[in-house]
Amino acid sequence: MVRACEKSLLKTKEPKIINVSSIAALGIGSSIAYACSKGALNSLSLSLARTLAPKITVNSICPGYVETGWHGSSKKVYKKLKLMKNLYHLKIC
Image 1 (cartoon, helix red, strand yellow):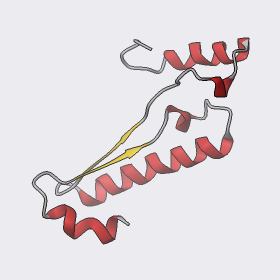
Image 2: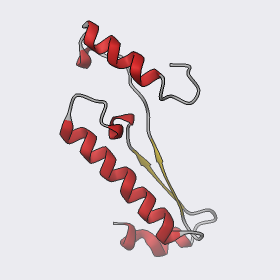
Image 3: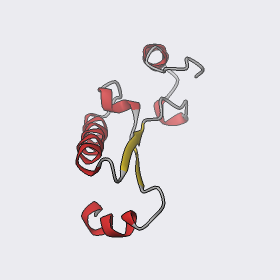
Image 4: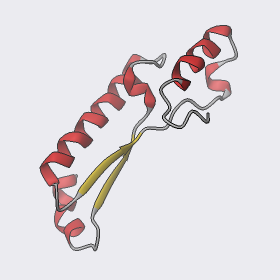
């Protein structure tokens, strides 16, 4: 997909590719498949950034944990949330 869009991207003023990943890429989440897919996306973003620089900027945004009904409300969930908070740079979540 990136190869197909590269020429069009280069015609823009400030070409950028932004991928939405997750903090789950660190292997903290409960889904192995999800963590693997997000880790792969981060690796792809890094490889693309090195390959396409300096003409095209590539980044990944990795949102952290969001408390929803999906995760339940057990002590295990809150323990995991506390662990994840230490990984957030701004410590505001």
